[in-house]
Length: 146
Length: 182
Image 1 (cartoon, each protein chain N blue to C red):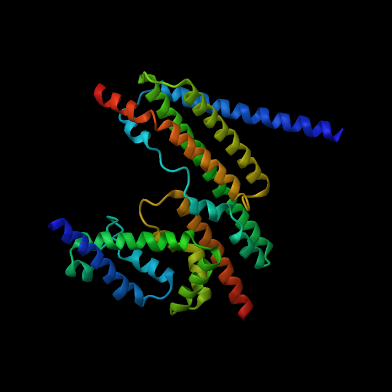
Image 2 (image 1 turned 90 degrees about the horizontal axis):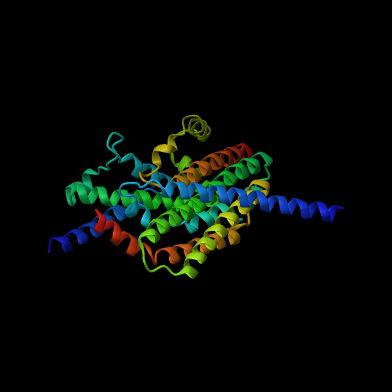
């Protein structure tokens, strides 16, 4: 009986996260950064007060970890063109001068914290490589637009 | 003259690849002499040779076509450098997984009393082929990049799956024997 409730809880939590939280974040990159930000950097565990309150901490953590991994894999293993477009969309949604974000991302490489735990090292390398290429493309598009 | 040169060059290349593969088989053989605690269970089911989607991205042409359209030689150079490095790592993984499979198979075969010589010969042949093929593919990638080589990598993956299929026939018996010996 309890097992059945847990499966329903996880499915319901997944729907809740998708419809109430992630749906409000347009760009895939935005979702990736958001999901990564729910992680405690000391423990690697995910926390979400709303989901934990409605379901349980364990269910919330499981659902967010799954969503994080799914968004990361979809972005990384998708076409590079889509990757660059999503990155540009994310930059335009942040209330900062795009040139500033590109420069900060090139120097500080903050996207490294967006990688889920236990990811295949080659997939992680592809993600980092794609970000570097996408940054160069976004920068050249900005220059062309001026 | 040119024909003779090409013939000699191809022959030398094959010899180099054979020597490299032989050195790897020896390394796998040395590892057999060093029993490791609990390795049987962990090594018994090596992970997939490579993720297909990763292979499509790295060895396909879609991303290269997009980069080429940007009209920047710097970008194209950066793209090819990155993807070449990834491709070589992928191929190294395929070879490493094949070596792990052979190691586990050999350990299980030592304790098995129902070995089929034909299957064993096929296992060795498939393993050698995977090593040679991946070395050759790595050389090609190193020379001209990984773009448009997806079909060839798919072939290496098929060979790895075949090797896995052959070796897994004996692994359960080998594992059972290890369990009984603990």
